[in-house]
Length: 315
Image (cartoon, rainbow, N blue to C red):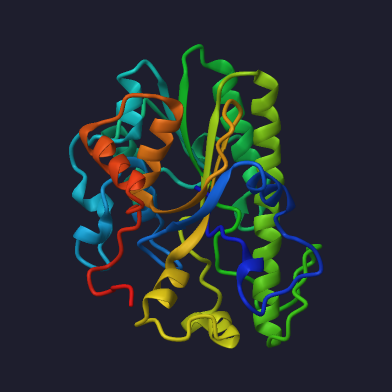
């Protein structure tokens, strides 16, 4: 899970002096990629991550609720499914373990280990959050030290908001679009933060390639970045013209998705809700799923892999 990650160059009206995510883009040319439709916008990461991990949709809980509050006992997830097949299951996150009750939640989902911020020794920061490079190196360390097959869930923090609107960022990526000064500053700050993620992704993939083990890496954004109060940047860009329309709803809740592997020729155009990620990946890995993931994969085959709010219908 890459915090607030999406390709900003796909937003009409946004231009930059250079590509913020060149490495990620190079992977999308050769591997399956597209969009993931999330249940939240600008925040509420836990709902996006639980959809991906458990394949349960948060569209069936009250609007605005956090799904982790509903999980108070062992709950089937991609971690528990693979743990039963002999996998080492670990979670890595560069923020406090108590946030969203992850230190409790991950145990319920079947993770044997959780490496949170408290266990990092003097990590390097892209203020105010730990650099994604540090997280990727920890993931590689976990893979290298484990003798079993690994399922590792990692959640980044470097691109988390709020974004600097008071002065221009010192980063190399700058917005060249016609926006207000505050909006330019915010988008430039965001672009430099996801550029940090892009560099860290290269560290991860390069490291995994050197291990010469069959591997899948899934990258997804949990939600679009919250760029200013009252969606300031999006309004200046007129990005969401009418949120009552299906097309604008999808725009607001879609982020980038990539499924990289080093053993297949898969290069599919993907568009799915988070609940369908595990079924897709388990099928690619040729691993046993659960009754739920098996059923959801039949919907993927039927091109029915987007589950939206009840009050939206395509017209």
